[in-house]
Image (cartoon, rainbow over all chains, first blue to last red; front, side):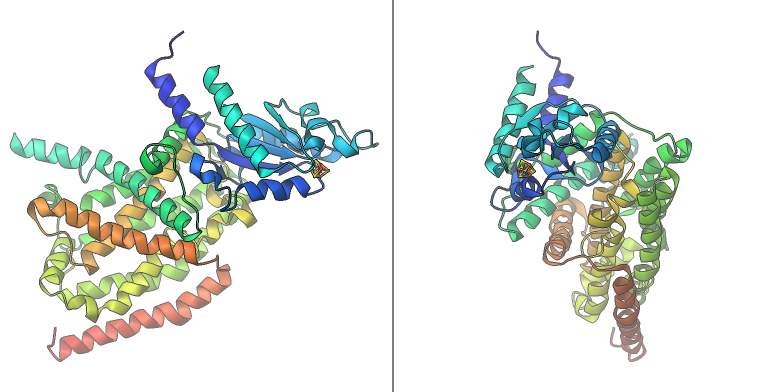
Length: 146
Length: 320
Ligand code: SF4
């Protein structure tokens, strides 16, 4: 099916201007440092129009790290709900994918997808910035193909 | 007929809606590129040639996103305020001494109207923060107004210096007279410096981005805004960037002349100021609100008073 011109312009704008919100749901801070690395001059994700935003209301992408514990689950859900549609969630780090080294602890859920729907998983403990950029690129291609 | 066409052209093309919005997006791109280059990055690259369409993509994306009005906010004000700010800045753009419209709306005292219209968005920020009924919004709004008290007086004094020097309160007159006396720029260099700093503070850009400090209060007054309303606020901010720079260019740098030369001159002079503001944003770090107030009342205000005195002396000695 061919998309209309307006829809294509919208998609172009959306994919070229991903504003990112970073949320730590109980990570050891390893992944958070790597997320910040991806925003430094060395990788310069602003090349693709990606920008770090502080307010969930401004963001398109939720970069969530950490295994989600009892305390942060409700917050994660709330931040997810505060984001305007269309939104994308990326689980960053092995913890965020499955609980990782914390899996099975008494206070730990098993990853981001136990609280909110996830669009992409990035493994690694901690993840590499290249892996984050690669995941975003793949996600963009996936949205384009859909 | 010809006249109607000219007015319509001015209202919608230049310096009206489309031209100004295009320039605002261009200014955003220049700003981001300069900022990135100073940080040894390349900035937006893949959206259009060298990322020139990046600001456009941002705005279209925001326009097409879901538009949330928080349940706690005062709905009418929350939805209405971005438009009010946008309208104020667009009206200010039409007062610039350029284009066909100037023959109709240029009058003695339009400098003051211009400054008033450029001051409105700050009040809108305050009200927007207040009516969004979130802590961060309220903090941001209160900071915006506190900051207003810090920079507005030195800024006004500095901007009125050229008026004093040329003996006119009309933008087109001021720019005509200062264009015919290039040495005037030297005479009010100090005021020009204060005005640039004041404009940066008015635009709430680093080092004066205290109301928006995202590391402290998330997004300040715009925290709760999303989608279309955020797009309008974002555009308003970039428009103010251009209109404010153009105002400074027209009163300090000798305006834009007349005839066909207007447009290139406008671009060169306005973007020169935009370039200075971008460099300042890249080179500085955020001040605290008390530091800003101290800075503007201890240094900026005396500087502009000194400049005022200097001009008065020049006037009395009949040098200028
Ligand atoms: S994946 Fe590893 S580095 Fe990342 S938050 Fe979990 S434990 Fe820390």
